[in-house]
Length: 417
Image 1 (tube, helix red, strand yellow):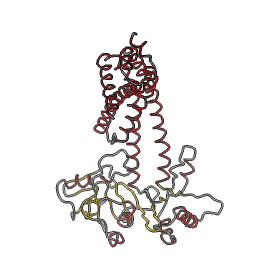
Image 2 (image 1 turned 90 degrees about the horizontal axis):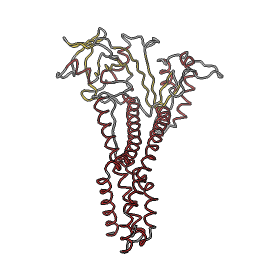
Image 3 (image 1 turned 180 degrees about the vertical axis):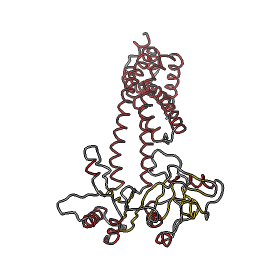
Image 4 (image 1 turned 180 degrees about the horizontal axis):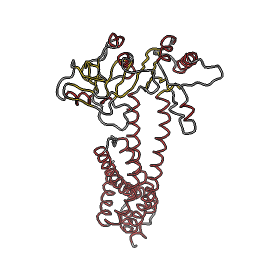
């Protein structure tokens, strides 16, 4: 153990000497390692952050839920666009049929989406790209709204279409500022709505599929008082969830039979609806993320190869400059494997220094992207470790031949060179 520590100490000393004595040569040689580690770790961090942001956005709309849709999320392309375009929209008849006939159904939710127009409270008003979501009562159990203040609608309020509203965080702040909004009345679409809840702040994100910070959420039966929910121009969504323990494929088969019967499709005619799961979209995205990671890896590897040859050149020069010193060490009893490990560790140290420089640049990019854009990017410990491991591996490969060459020197010949 003591011997090994001495080897590490000697390697550190020699690596420091190389850095100090040949600053420019060492710096230029380590640029390849720095660029390589930067490329690999930066792309990996960007892809991991992108994946995390997208999955968080998908989680908002339910990862264990089946969505009855007009479109197929995973097969849509320019060649079949009109095929899907001709399909009928999902409507309340589909929802009623599933609720009445499904034996595997646990939860179901139907939601309509429309512009809210101007919202006002006393002298304050808010207008613009606001959304009113009219949802059936069970949609809360599927969507999992995070209510920071107040409560959700009662079953009676949902059933009777009582004019109550839950506001998004930003919407509540614009209308009420520091005033507690619970129990206050706002005007929307010419009607008065009592505020019963405020959603927790989501903040800015590029991947929020619906920005709930700017949403006015009301019961479906309340929305039906001023919206024609059967109008094809009104966006709507139908989400269903099976009972615990029910096989998802069996549930989808049951839904298919119910919907085909409801839409009176002949036996040989294909479905004019899609049953979509978040897992299907996630699987499609996994391939995309893997491709991005591979692209960054290939770019980084080319830079690392250049850096590896540069470090190997430093090590060959170092062996030549220290030939007599190596001969003296071997004459005094230093074994070949000690000489070998000295140069291997020295090469590893040089590459780790280059790798750390690359990680510092990655961290700078992470801070800049997170502070200047709505995209939240992070440098995880696993990606830091990934970069260090690659640095160590490249250091060993770069130094192995010079190290073997040094360990095989003849002491007598080496001393007099």
